[in-house]
Length: 299
Image (cartoon, rainbow, N blue to C red; front, side):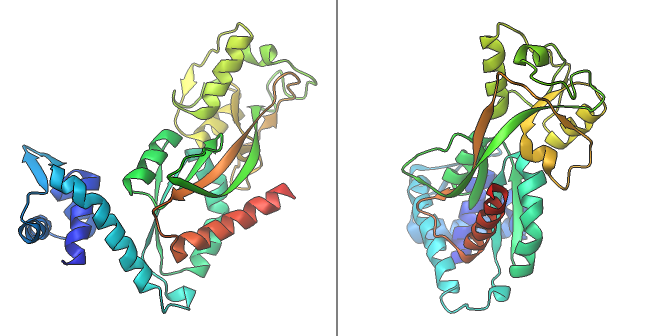
């Protein structure tokens, strides 16, 4: 059984398309089709139902899926048995990350990671936490970085986490900036600039507003935390974001943290990988850098 055939099989499953799998792997579509045919001939069963443009696994394909992932994970382990020079370690590290973390954590450690492992390619997908956990369980991400409560699940490993505050932010020109002991009700009277509907912090924000019997006005919404900071700096509204967004050296907008006395909130930033995933040198190196970065933040 050829490893390349298994790689093509997983790509077709993950991307749902022979053409997308071929593009991702750098093959012609006919080559990926040949790889799948060779697998099917070798096993004597069909692996995909090809209905129109949709490719879905047959029951035989579903059975092969877990075996294929484990076989290729073992292959990766064998590659690094004799590798002692980190600068010669290659491969691709697949990351999934909440958008707000990319502008602080990732930018703070990625330079050192590239210096340590210059031959490793890093692929990053940005998504909300629920989608990130799905990616991890589907095998399309090696490591994910989430915000929220630390999740305890038998199929997940959390090698490190960090507690962080969430804060109300405004432009220094905003009428509330510089005032002491504001209430949440004072802030909720302002227009808010928010992210999409399916984020952890936004859920906590609406929960608090409901406890105060108030509605949140949100005339501006964007999925980008960086754009939110830019809009808040223009005094177009206030927002509720992780404090690291304000203190990040990569955040150029001038922002003020509002002094709200009756609402404090903290959450965890967590790294996860799947229990059945071998902790590769590429993964371990990034985890080490993240642990060191969070350790400095806690001191």
